[in-house]
Length: 126
Image (cartoon, rainbow, N blue to C red; front, side):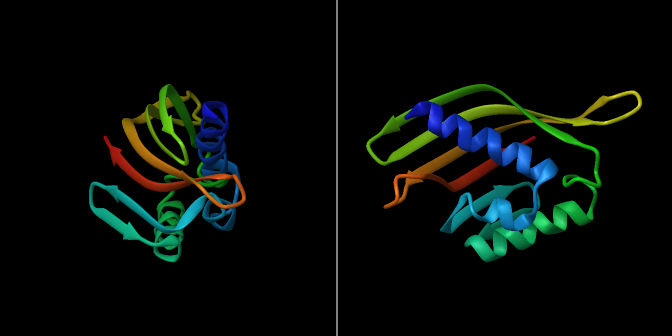
């Protein structure tokens, strides 16, 4: 169970760098909540739009050259709900490569009717 959650969070980080906003949206619940400095999004549509805007600003996506690195992942799951705590590094491609941002994620996840884990809430702290 915890490995499925870790895989979801690592896939989200990889898709933030290499995937499309649609790919990211597939990992979110319909009523997802996202909170970070300067932004608060509710629902899949608004969150995907916000993540798309982050790409337009050059913080993520294939054109940014940045990589999201997840570390110190701690997962607590009970039934169909889970909380995950982790640190992240946003690393630029360089040259030379450099850490652009450091922060933490506090995630709440839920398992859908199909058994897949989805991100229901993310709080980003930098």
